[in-house]
Image 1 (cartoon, rainbow, N blue to C red):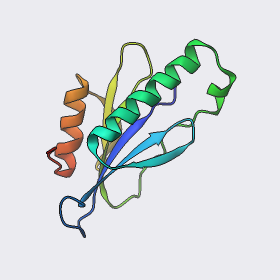
Image 2: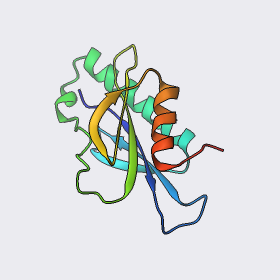
Image 3: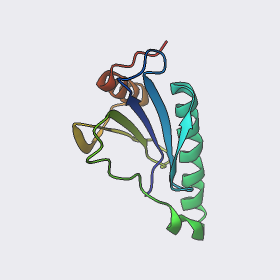
Image 4: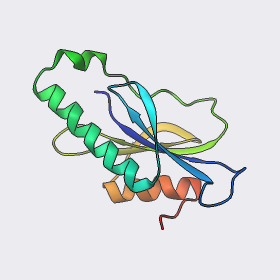
Length: 124
C-alpha cells in the first residue's frame, strides 16, 4: 500500500530557520509537496493517510495509480523520512540518508523525534 511520507532535509548552505526543508510525499499525485513547517507536514501526511485508507476501504479503482515514495539512494543531502500507514491503526516507520530500510517506530512522536534527531532539527 502506498503511504504518505514526511521528509526533512538539512541544507548546510543555509542559516536557521531555513537550514531544513519539509516535504510531503503525496502517493495520489506522485510528487513531493513543499511544506512551511513540521506541523504543516504532519497535518498533510495525516490527511493523505486518511484519503488513501478510504480509497482502499471503498475499493476505489484509483488506488491502482497510487505511487510509492521514491528510493532516495544516491541523494547526497542529509534527510530523514517518516512514513504513515493508511490502516485504521496507524503504523509509523522511519528511514534516513544513512539507513534506507524502513524501521518501525513505537509511535508518531517517536518517529518525529527520530527524524528530527537524524538531521539535527529541534522543533520550536
